[in-house]
Length: 59
Image 1 (cartoon, rainbow, N blue to C red):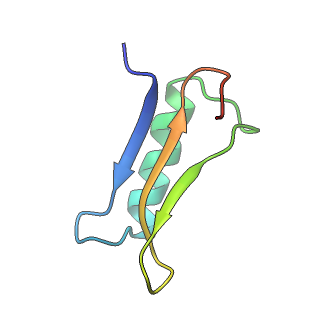
Image 2 (cartoon, helix red, strand yellow; image 1 turned 90 degrees about the vertical axis):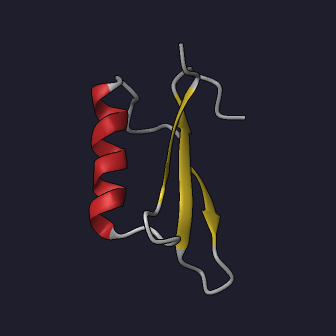
């Protein structure tokens, strides 16, 4: 069973639609809205990857 949900941008940086799909997947998996999200940014500050833990451990 996966311990987290991870999403990356199709063309390196994520689009709003890709980010929205990530949030929808996390909600469907039962992740609460107060859970911390980890993000990897490009040098230009754009989102490259996001990840959220499925368990209660945000470390």
